[in-house]
Length: 341
Image 1 (cartoon, rainbow, N blue to C red):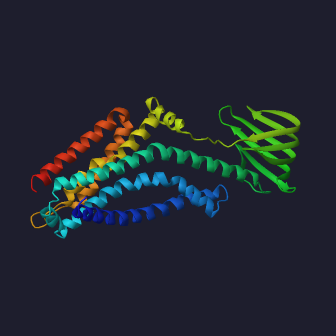
Image 2: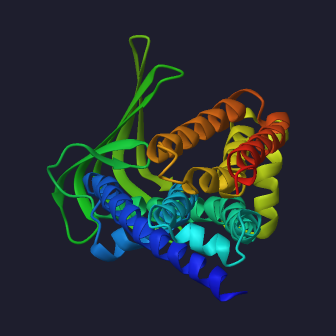
């Protein structure tokens, strides 16, 4: 790599890092605000917040990195053109064709990283995050408080009159409504205890009654002992699970939509870098470039196309749309830049 190429890359990376850190900070603040809403469901420590944030990092990267790459490349090249550095670079043997080849490899590398992130890391992080939330809900179910409404144990609404030591309760009432059958179920117990057994919770009730109310009929069942079990919906992630997860796209429209959109966003740097060079390389003496307008139009158009393709023709349209978008960028680059320089 020549000294000129290294200089161009250094200018790009400076622009990229400053923009990426700015967007990353803004998205991080929004993410923490979103995560903090979980405190209304269960108690969350700062460590828990940070752990949940880590599970969201792959998704945050998918949102930020493609757009940051395109904007940073456009602005870096435009800044060099505005300062007349691009003319000097072209005079020093770095032609637009060599410049495009330089950023082709960089955009290809970025797209591959984004694709790996979207295909492997996002499904894994989402499942790990879901497992984490289920375990936190289970811990919240252990910490049932007396004389408080709105508490839940699994699908049951629960009310406890008195505490009798840690995880031991007196005069407990549970309620569950089955929306399918329209049956209301009440359970009354004189005493109860909660035990954590491996990966599940067990609510052990003593000396009470079960009432089923349906169609204005009331049925009562008395019991000496009754156990209600709550198991969080957790799942271990393996490499073959990822293949099974995405293979469902062949018959699941929702999964096909996610796969299509993930692939198109991942390849945005690769199919848009020529647009960035076309908008960034300008001669301010003879041109009045609308760099910002063109830049944001490309982003909006691409994401609208990605959404529509993922929604209507995800499997067939993804590759075709990417190829067409890249061919258009190549045509614009040839007519706007190579024909002049």
